[in-house]
Length: 462
Image 1: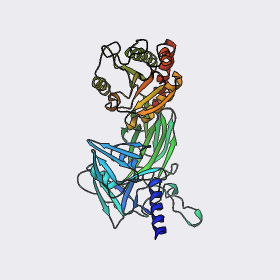
Image 2: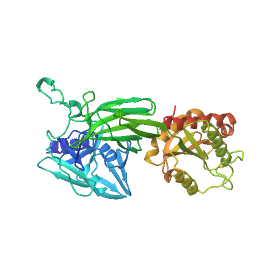
Image 3: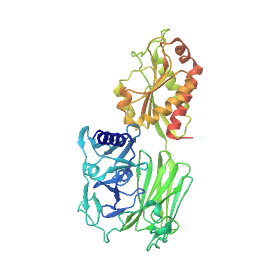
Image 4: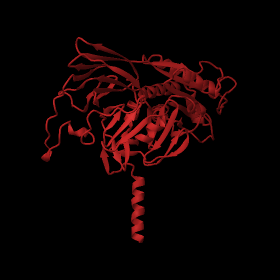
């Protein structure tokens, strides 16, 4: 009996520790408003719960999705609803309240799958299961479910099967020749994507952030023989990371093209009916970056060993950073304060949020005991972790002071801002060595360049 108990405990511990697990599963078709979705990773039934790749939630249900690798957490936002889900945990947070789910999110082959019924119904979207057809129907439009005209076959599509039928010995039948209009080619050159059809094309499109991407739908079309008849991708360049495409809906036929971006862009979509083309042209847009000089006026901040004020160091650094950012055509720098004035913390936050800032960087000097020296970078929100790691690497290298690591703390200017935000503690004014360097123009120039380089790296600006 002890051996049995020990084995069970070991198995439970293994399942808890290893986030990517193997499940008995059945791939199933998923219909959205009557259209069969053909995503890169097939939805599947796991222990009688329908699990779908997280991209379906963002690209098909219009929700904003964020992934926290450290916590293995998925955050979903749509309208006024916020959902937090954790891999292998059946308790979710909805609006800050704990809610039990029938199934926990899972990682399978590097893909995050979430329970579609729980997520969709929490977002106010109807979900139904057809046991005879072994299919799921998600309904976002009034009027109920639109069933397919023909039942699905095979319970889903294997992305690696190339659209053919797998035969003994590994050979495949060639995919059937599509009937009706088809997409013949998708080409990405520089900052332009050209979609070529066999007939005149009509396109609908929308923009998604976190990560940045453009979604283009081409109704009444299938994928032609020159393209994978189910899904595939095209390499990009410039602002384009890659272009993914799939047979988004089988009945009626519809092709979806997703343009994954390296940076924030504006874009135009032109339908050339004569040439049977849709042309998407991208233009990189300017990022709004706020540089926040901490303290000001009667709020001196820390006082150095020789009586210098932190507020003056912060402002000098902010002005140097802005001067460098003014030379960057893709960055619009904004200062929270440009002189010795005082702003409440909430005023700084409001200024950043109201200006639609993309990145927020607050500059400070630190103070503690005389023996403490070094550079620290603080973040609070999950969307700021990457920014914090990048900024810390560049600033620490430029400052040349001891590395006191990236840390999490709920400073108000980085908790209430809507964008990725960090607070930089460049050095310690209470340390004689740090203080001497921090008020040196050469040191300030070097660190200012490090801050700019970190911002550009985060925004993927060459």
